Amino acid sequence: MEIEENNLNKKIFILIIIITFLIEFLVRENLFSISIPIIIFLQRNFYYFYPIELFFSLFGMEKGIFLILIISYNISNILIPLILLSISLISIYIGGILKIIYQNERPFFINSEIKVLNCEGGFGNPSNHSLLSTFFYLSLYEIYVNKNEKINEKQKNLIYFLTIIFIFSIVFSRMFLGVHTLNQILFGSLIGFFLYFFMFKIYKFNQNVLFIIYNFKQIVFVIIFLIIFGFFNYYFFFNFDNKILYEKYNFMIEKNCPNFPIIKRLENESFYCIFVLSVLIFAVFGIYYEYYYIFSANVSKFIKYNFNNENENEINLLNNNVNNRWNKTNFNVSIKRFFVILIVCGILLIPYFFISYDNNFFVVLVFKTLIPLYVIVFVLFSYMKKITGYFNLNNNSNNFDNEDDEYKNNLKLNNNNDDVINIQNK
Image (tube, rainbow, N blue to C red; front, side, top):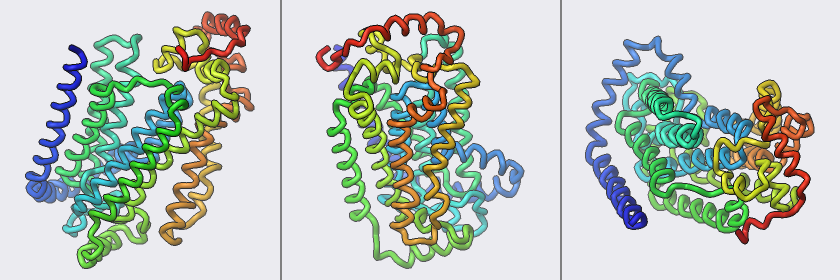
């Protein structure tokens, strides 16, 4: 009965998505036209809100998301930041593909009265900020709040309401800043919501980090296939002959955002969005490397180090967000560890800061952007815990919270047992 109901939900879900794309196609031009005078009115009469709108917009960008990923890594088990990273990269990837399919202009491309308060140069539909922030922050709520049994329903409802307000603030900021129209932010938000709903309500994602390790090759194959599929769409849909229109767009970009990076303009941004999905391979490889080469495929030691779990009941709870054990330290140590992680990531980002955007497109793409990201996520998911442990900032340095004494005593007892648990056979 449950399987039949789930299959019905999937069919309804697919039908709703198809209807959404059809409605978007029908109302796109009308909503775009309506948006132009609204943006001009907002910018002329509420210009003093600019710093606030820019602040909210930052949390829908890669930099704001990356900061949250670091915080998540610092307080959670290893699976959660991997999920959040996957959500971010998938959102950027899907947005990149849809933008190259639609190739819709941004509002300031066609109206010189609109002030560009936050430079953007890619195609406009859908809004990647709207897509990413909706998918990411609803997932953040689902992982940290909705699945947390320590939070009662009233508190969950309040946090959910605040999450929606926060997402709305990010989405609205994109229109206020003059870089998106109403149809673009609504379309992006709906796609983000559909992705969230599919992942947590339809598919009901329920895997642990060992599933990822044991299916490493299959996961890498799927990612490579998606990248190839993305490039197929890129070359199939992009109209390379429409030079006059793209010269007009580039002129407006240059006029409003002088010296804006080539890599972030029009089709180049979509190319980048598709290829950036490859970063996920190095995150998964980092976990795979840690398991096989640092822990020599010793499941017991790997689990204890990353989760401090050894018995079967605890292993079954690997997905539980309360299971924050490798980094369960007091507040002061957690703050120190956070800054150590930031400093390490900053050092690994040196090529990003020193390689100029004036270089060749592929030099910027590969050496300024992709390679630093590859190195960061690999180190983050493989060696970072060893680095923070070197500074005595992990829980094996006895920096537990006082409330965790009972668990610490149980851990000492568990550590006396060196038997390897063969989870694959269970």
